[in-house]
Amino acid sequence: MSDQQELATLLAAVFPDADGAVTPPIVQTSLFTFDSYQSFEDRMAGRSDTAIYTRVENPTVAAFEKLMADAEHGEAAVGFASGMAAISSTILGFVKPGDRIACVENVYPDTYRFFERMLRPFGVHVDYHAPERFENDPDLLSNVTLAYLESPGSVVFEAMDLRRVADHAKRHNVLTMIDNSWASPVFQRPLTLGIDIVIHSASKYISGHSDTVAGVVVSSQGHIARIRDLTLPLLGAKLAPFEAFLLTRGLRTLHARMMQHQATANLFVDRLASLPQVRRVNSPGANAVPGLTGRSGLMSIEFDDSVDIAEFSDALTLFRLGVSWGGFESLILPARVGLAQAGEQNSMQKFGVSPNLVRLNLGLESAENLWADFRSALAKSTA
Image (cartoon, rainbow, N blue to C red):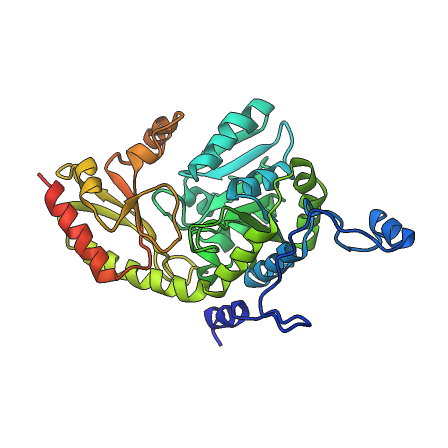
């Protein structure tokens, strides 16, 4: 059985309870009470793991966390109210003023803003490096506390050899974190490649329906315990029971959805290569780097100067303009609009992102219909 077949079987599991329900019940409560002084004392003293308050633990959330830990081959997981809550709470759990972070270039824009607007003023230094430097410079991470990675990245989708990067990090005793939202555990499991902590914007492929905002972190028992002890309760960005229920629903179709996203993306990559208006397609496929076993539906395209990006965007009928991705619907995000806010236009220039770049989220509509819509819009917007 392949890794992908194993994951599909795992995520199709049911949760029968005493009454025969096959999905985890939504335990919509803020408070859990105790039937004796001794049981209450044991819980407050840490001698039991009975639920006490939904801000830190809830049975519905725990069911989702268990599924995510298994899917990523991790020991434990913790859910959050958003992907940024997962990112910020995890990073704040492991850095302090004076520490240095090495971050991959073209990181998710809100992660970049978090580093620049919040961490840097508090004395945490952040340096940005190209993926090949993480791979090829064994001393890049000397004097670094944390390496924050995306593979593939958020804008030009460069992939890196994570095992090689993890080996460099362990040599310098550097903690490694990666946002694995693009690949999902269907196409990449960074923990098995030596990365320490995996983060997901669960709003994306994990949910898959554009109706949930959530995040999740998967790692060792020790790292997750640290997050649960420090940033989860004190920052309070907990995952709600109803969102956890929706995420569990999404996980059960994750494998099937990712196969469809990949099929449509493969069609687009093959056909885009023949279009004279397309300078470059950013969409790593299966085996582009060790450990990456497939291609998701999120890619970016760099057009030449003959294409009017605004006219192209407006001429599309199936693709919608939007900043998120991972759901049924297909989306377009022009880089000059999606990144040109709060100083990110400067970061585009710094990291070599073309103003003619657009990001496509290929959804679950008919691939041929999407391609026809794309070609029609391109014809209308080319000089």
